[in-house]
Image 1 (cartoon, rainbow, N blue to C red):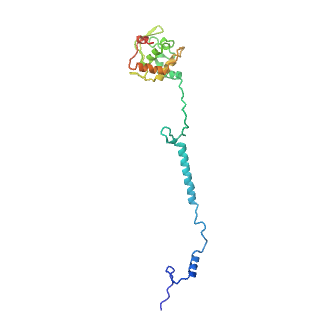
Image 2 (image 1 turned 45 degrees about the vertical axis):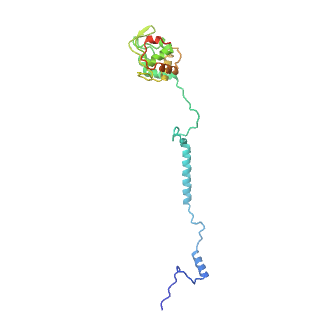
Image 3 (image 1 turned 60 degrees about the vertical axis):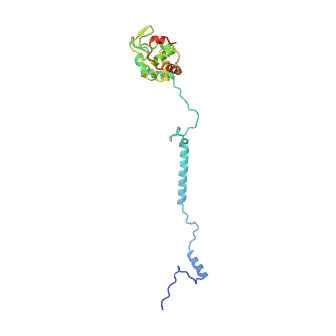
Length: 222
């Protein structure tokens, strides 16, 4: 007679009683109950980290995006608060002196006296202190031929064109022309009034294509 085979708990036990089933379940559930559902702190820490990064990103974009406007975006500055920009007005005397020292001083000297028999003086000159249209025209288009200043005739050198005109070698803006004329009309004891840039623009457009002036032509101007 063969030995009795042990019962395999995985096999269905058709003859199992209710008491045996309850006993099996009690043994399976024995031990410390899992009241925390295996809760760990790591997911909560990650949640706080990512929340902080999202908050930082939103704050950074709000502060430095410049509202994503192509004309004001600059990641190094805060966006503007609106309103009109403050425009700093340039002193025409200061600008005129700078222009004079950059080009005119070579011929007309720091004291405005020029060089005897070569370059006419600006200090006390009737051309400098006289008609606005004449002095503007000289600087815009230049001067050729002899010219009489304070009773003396100068003809050794021509005055070049400084304005933004055809053949102009310096191409100074109307503002720079007005500034340097304002400067020489009030320097070295001269007492003439300032020159407005709008007047320079008017005369430049009026005589846009002409060449250098002669003394006779200038005397016909008002």
